View 1 (cartoon, rainbow, N blue to C red):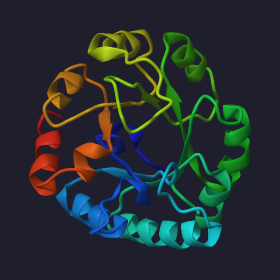
View 2: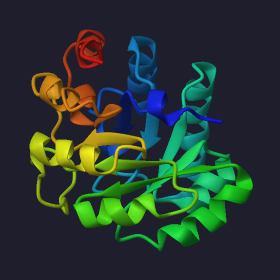
View 3: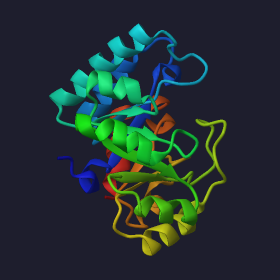
View 4: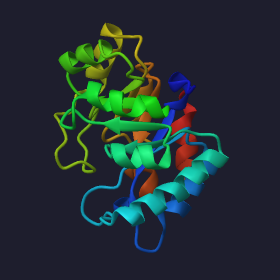
Amino acid sequence: MINWHKALRLYFVAGTQDIAADETLASVLQTAIISGITCYQFREKGTGSLTENSERVQLAKALQALCKSADIPFIVNDDVALAIEVKADAVHVGQSDRAIAETIAMVKPHGIDVGLSVNTLEQLAAATEVVGLDYVGVGPIFPTTSKLDAEPAIGTQGLSARIKAYPTLPKVAIGGITVDNAPSVLSTKVEGIAVISAITQSSDRKADIHRLLLNH
């Protein structure tokens, strides 16, 4: 049973498409784990991502083993079949994917938790009514270059409004979060922050991860 209120503290999201040519996703994840991330989402999509299912499964299992050795949740983005095959701790889906109730029905028998992306207050309100949903990703907080189809940024005020309106469901803030703006996001008392480039593009990952964790 995962305590998502704690596990969301520093939520690292990445796939091979996010990693520089002279590095590997596994090595970046290993450094991130040692430095203190509290969960990891395998998001393999977009230009430069793996397309062969066998390669995705092999990589997912290797990354999952790293997470398991550190006792942090391993989450698969969108790909329900992959999440079931590797017995991931959770699957995270968006608003445009299959109905959330359908996803929950597919994965819960396998002991897999479910996270959902929300942008508007209406989407968050609907999410709170979903039986079996474990947490939500709220955002984007700031404009982001990591998702080409990102919704409008809600800002820290928008995040605060969503937390106050629906305080019980665990939330992780995502979208455009950096070492510099993380304190303003965390001042809302959100459970955690999710980042991609703040870690993958960092020149000093250990120091930056420690800074991202500072204000919790």
